[in-house]
Length: 408
Image (cartoon, rainbow, N blue to C red; front, side):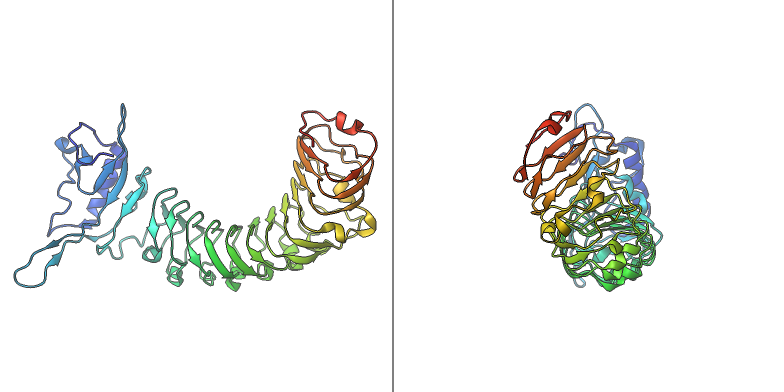
């Protein structure tokens, strides 16, 4: 880092202009705290400006990494209490032009009502810390992207003041607490809350977000059921991986546009029937590993979807497979399927021909089951095949015909 050094490092023009635009919205008449921020030909080295730090680069112009407007000083006043040196005024959207900014501190100032027209705000992949309560004055925001920071604290109810939100990404932070009602975001299209420390029940208000297309709450500690999501007809991606959810209501089968439904590593103990999937013709990814499922669909049922990913390991499917026979759709692989994992299920019976119609490379994991009889005919192009810890017998010819395989 360099701060206020004597090296001839000119600012990048776009970043310098962004700072000057920011200054125009601030009120600094009394204390001249930003007097070094001047638009003059001989003052182009903006890294000597107050509150800035830049990258220490060689051979190219450095970027602004730190903007610290927390002045944190007082002025002695003989006639009364000391005066705090603060800035007031408006924080403009020019901040988003500082694309390499790693640290932003605007605390202990008096920025009021300044960003009510801002519609897009992104500080993805920075080092922001603290609570989100101070963001609630961005009442016109439509997109808020704050993933991959170090934000903590709760998802505060005062967020309802930014009710225009259409896209919210708080993923990969350290936020905690229960989720608020969320019904105060009626226009929300995408909600990304994965990889935090949220806990408590899935809020009922989620079921009122009729415009929601993407919901990712994976890697949290949420509890409850998903029965309030059945009316979200525009949902395309539903990811609840690694939570503590229970139950899989049949009403989720009404999510006609659903393309990704991932719910592994939960506490699901439920019976899967045809009605769960009969209307999900757009489904491409289905992951339910490490749950306790009961399969109760006809062996002859052929679903309308064309899956690309099937992950059902550790689901105890073997205890309920009817007549020791796999459902026929498991043996008629969709042509675009590239991942099939049925391992650790103790499934009995013989596995039939798996070669039909598959047109690309595929991973197949059938390990740790009770499959018996001859090895099935596999697709010719397999990137990984596991059949260990079964009761297969007979010839290995079907494996010998596989190209580009890693087989165990």
